[in-house]
Length: 426
Ligand SMILES: [Zn+2]
Image (tube, rainbow, N blue to C red; front, side, top):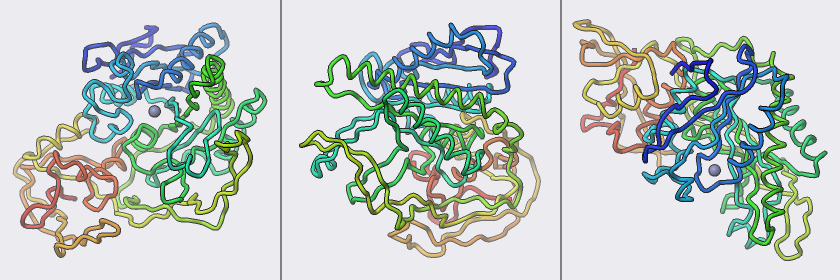
């Protein structure tokens, strides 16, 4: 969808119950720094939407914007109305960025493809109390949790120094307002600690990988009931200040986001499997003690800050999807991938064969071998990899990808009886 920039707002899609999903535009439309802000993927996270409403009010009064913002305050209007996390089809929208089963997320992908923001901010709320943490008397206490794209197939837009600067600036801006901010940390039941998932089914990784945007997730701590109205105000205000801080930082660092090449090259190596690697590093983090109510710095071991790539594939020129796999083709077309077909042409293709029926139980990796054969490709739809989102395409279609569409049984993309993977490579 190409947005009509003369308008102040556009309806980009409709919820299942027919409510409009509306994007509002604010700022300097000539600016190369385009920022897309989305809130309310989870319908029950009302504070995130209120914080973005505050931001809209502020930006409308600000006369000197050097950026152009598109703001979608309510991604999930049905969930908002029913106060549910999911939409009215029980789809968790922030897990739907691969299969695009919901109208709402399909509309977002189509909008991003047309508008091509440099930065996307995905605004949420997080519950500070988790059962397994309470057993250890721990409550998460940061006003803001923030994270950046983490899937290793995403080309890093910013240097490590710039990324550090991003976190440091946000933390110190919030600190000056008496609020706290930390990089999102997930405390697993096993005791391991890591940052946000490397899976590509959420907005952060999917939109970054597909469109080369720098997609940030911003989570405001949900107030507890006993915090009352003051707690609610604090949550909204901390998310509002975090949004302002990120926008200021983006304005100052515009140059960092220019001149990026997002189209992959043939034979380029693309990581399709990765794992978290525990380090000797200790994560120092402020946590609240549920008994004493005191907040203090805790030394956390079993921290996995690093992501280790476990397998690469070499990028083919084309992926060939059988015309008979209509459900899969529908998903790929919804993603907006360009494609074509050829009639009566014989080509040498690469076919994946399952070597034996065993799947490594620990890694779920299949033992496969590539074979070459010559076939007529008229029964296939051709998806060139030299296009925007080419790496995303590889992660979706490679049989050994940890992030692939073969994880969705309804797409019937598993190994067939004769152990041949249906999608081919050239
Ligand atoms: Zn959420």
